[in-house]
Image (cartoon, rainbow, N blue to C red; front, side, top):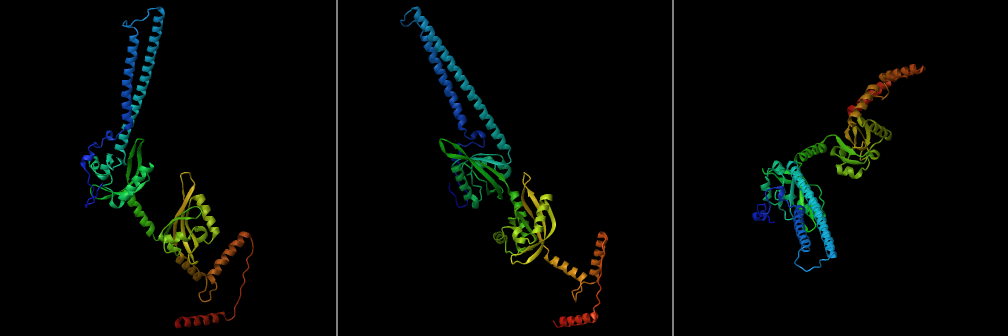
Length: 420
């Protein structure tokens, strides 16, 4: 096979004269030919043996030779004729039985051929039969529906002529591996549409072995996965570029897949860097092990955890707060296969909430609890005492010159702030 300067293969059209135009009958069926040949040979042999035995029987009764005419002779002759006639009958019965079996086998082969034709012509997948020289012996009509080529156009080309040049070598290597091992592996490659665009195909091949022929034919089944590949690329981009951390992990905590945002939340440069250093999310990142046990329990019971605030460790051993949403993914048997979810960094929000809480319940200058906090705690204490039917004691302390002390401290703090 030669590649000219324009990148297309040139083949001698005469090399395809033996291949008919996309008819199932064009695929050689060596078994069927052997059955037909054997049936004809068996019939001819049967006729020959039957005639020979019949002539042998008749020859005993012809008066052209001198034979004894005693009663013993005619008795022996009668026995020989009966034995030969029985032999002829048994032989004919055996032949008829073999003919019946051969006919049944021929009918089964014809039904299989018809089934193959129906399946291949109506299947959504593209089916092709290729010989050891790369010639297309059969192409299903799905090629025309998906790639725009008619079976005749494909038959006049090399099997890998429409394959993308960058993918052609791996296709050739895969075909050679199938011919050697007889088993094919799933392969993805690009194939040119008749309009010039490229379609992504998922292919698997198997070898049609023949004990007396080393040049095995290949049956290739292709599926168009272009749309699926585009969708995968689209969602892969969403996964990798998301602003929240996305992860998949085993029920034991081993990370399976993470995105860039999750790695950056924990102080790692990339997902690969994260996966290389973190082998267990539970033991290496989570701080409160009691909270981990609670999350596992909820996942086992309900299958999902929503808006759980969790404190985690970063690579530099600093702490952060994240908002976790996790769900359990189960297999067909109902067993938990993995956990997947999202982590959102809420450290700034937690710091702001802590500051707001401090301003609401404490004095900014002294850091001591204010009247609001006193009323809150006193109300809770009174409510508790009513439930328990206990008493509550309130201790009142009067600090001398407390107002002048706070005024002095406030003035000093303001001077320091202005000087800064």
